[in-house]
Length: 246
Image 1 (cartoon, rainbow, N blue to C red):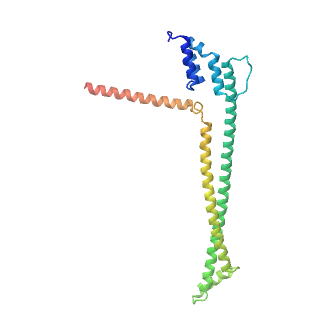
Image 2: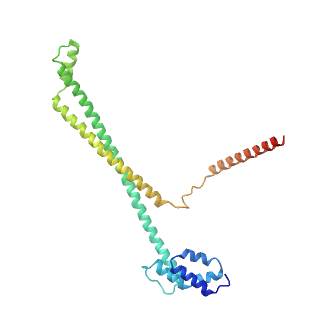
Image 3: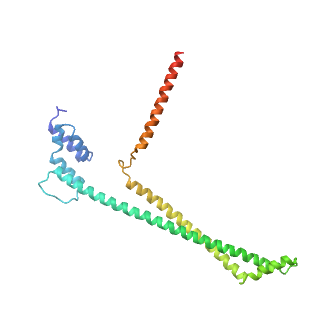
C-alpha cells in the first residue's frame, strides 16, 4: 500500500465515487484506516462530488464551509426532514388504526342491535304462528280443555294474524340481510385494521430499541437455570468417569 503514490489512490477513490459504488459511509471508513487515506479522503473534490450527487436540489450555504462540512450540514437537514416525514406518517397510520377500531365497535353495536331485533321478531312470529294454528284447530272437534286453551290463545292476539305474520317474516328477512352486510363490513374493516397495524409495527421498528432488556428477576432466573444445567452436566460427567474406571 505504501508503494502506491497518492495520485493512484486519488484516482481509485475518484473512480469509486463517480461510479456510485463508494458512499459517504465507505469514504469515512476508508479515512479511519490509516493517516494517509484519511488525508486523501478529506479532499474537497471527493466530497463536492458526493454533495452534488446525494443532494442535487439542496440550497447553497456559506462558501467558508469545506465540502465535507457542507455535506454534514445538508445530511443533518435531510435527516431531520425524513424524521419529520416519518413522524407524520406514523401519526397518520395511528389515526387510521384508531378510526378502524372505532368503526369496528360501531359495527359490533349495530350487529348486536340487529340480532336483538331479529330475536324479538322471531319470538313474536313464533307466537303468532301458534295463534294461527290454534284458530284453525278451533273448527275441528277436540276435547273441551284443549279447545278452551286454543280459544284463549286466539283471543290474546289483538291484531290480524296473517298481516302481522307477513310483516314479521319480512322484518326477520331484512334483519338477516342487515346482519350479513354488517358482517362483511366488519370483516373488511378488521382486515384493514390488521394490515394497518402491521404497517405501523414496521414503521415503529428500530433494530436497537426493539431489543428487550432483561429485568433483574429474569437475569436471576436465567443465571440459576444455567447453574443448574452446569451442575447437572458436571455430575453426569463424574458418573461417566466413575463407571468407565470400574
